[in-house]
Image (cartoon, rainbow, N blue to C red; front, side, top):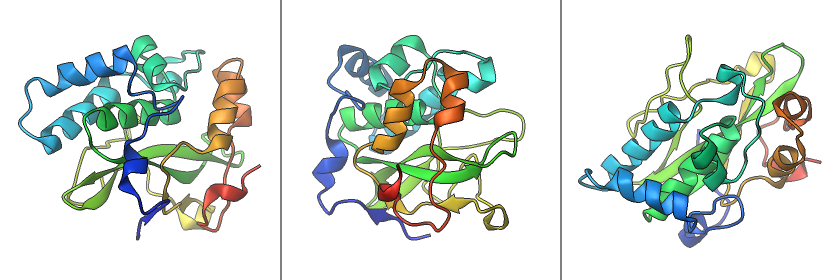
Length: 207
């Protein structure tokens, strides 16, 4: 799949905002700690990925009702769904000067009742974009950091109207952020997360 930048300016993929708040003390402190014993950007990116994947549990796996969405809160509270964990990883990578995008897949809900957007990131290393999924592994899910072929948590099934969306967004999609911010708890969030279009198009038309 050809990945498509949302903007030609790579500086947009290094920016901080209210969600990817990589100027926050907890983000800077965590990034500095992860960077202490690594030799280069590749090693740092891998260390940051594995930290978010393994040290911050996916809230569905731990049955944690709390909803996080801001990167600094995800790192502080050590919980979040896929989107929250993607925001945290993007913040850690951008904090060390690695351009990072947000990207999305349309997947079938666990209960089979429709579809939901799944959030992941893409890192810019060696002159190319590489998607990484920090969701967190569990039985049946074995995502790995890789620049040599994707090792994502999920491979969309077109027969089930699942889709890889090719656009790499410089900022989290507002429909996703809106659902996260409005959710009273994770159960409420599960009912309100958007599903996304089924044709692989950009997500700008989401309500």
